[in-house]
Structure formats: structure tokens, C-alpha cells
Image (cartoon, rainbow, N blue to C red; front, side, top):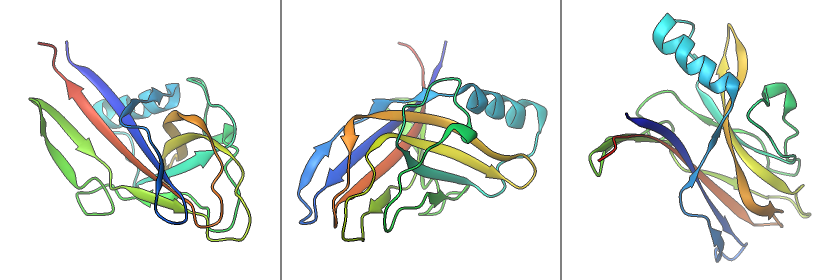
Length: 169
């Protein structure tokens, strides 16, 4: 049986560009709302996320039953969710390819940067949500960071998400 997995990668850099942490690929946590939306769109032709997706940072721990209304996002100069288009462009999902015989699609890498003069709120989770003019916003999946990430002035946090269908050997 094929396993479908979303993975997150976080790369935290200081203001000089030095890597403070590279998490490598970490398995995500899919929300109930995210699974429901995937099934509804694919199998029942429900309205797709016509406004694409967004990647963001949250200050409180999320769970499988969390929804978009549960988000408490980071605040700080320069922070906002970053759009990921629903297409194959460089700002969407530019990579669709086999990886060791398994199909995967990967988002563009988005970069959050503290452009202010003081630290941001500490981020504990990264997340992916969809935006749709009919159904509103849906929290699809999230991933806890290895430790709370408080971006200091000039710090960046890169986030990339991939979806991979793994066929067992």
C-alpha cells in the first residue's frame, strides 16, 4: 500500500547568513480538515483552493484536530504568511518528479525575514493552509519546529514542503 506523506524542512539563518539550524526533512502532521479537503476536492470535485496555499508560522502548538481558527501567528516587522500558488511556477510547486521510484511534488522554498529592529514572537510550528473564495481558509498540515524559533533582526527562516507518495518495497 502506498503511503502519502508531507514533509517540512526548516533552515534558520542569522543576520550574517550563517545556518543556525537545518532540520532536514521532517514528517508533517496532517489535520483532520486537511485530509477532508483533499478527499473532497479530488474525489467529489469540490471547489479547489482557487487562491492557492500559504505557508506561515504559529506561536502555539497545533494538533490533528486544530483548524484555521486555532492559529495564533507570529507577529513582528516583516512577518506575513507567504503565498504558494497552485501551479508549476517557481512560486508554486515547481518540482514534480520521481524520487527513488516514488512520485513527489515540492513547494518553492519561502523565506521569512525579520526586517525590524526587535525580535519576533517565538514560532513553534510551521503550517500550510489553503485559501478558497468559496470555502475560506483551511489548515492543511503543520510541523513543530525542533525548538522555538525567535527570529532576531535580520534572521531568516526558510520553509519548504514536499508531498511524496511512497510505494513500499
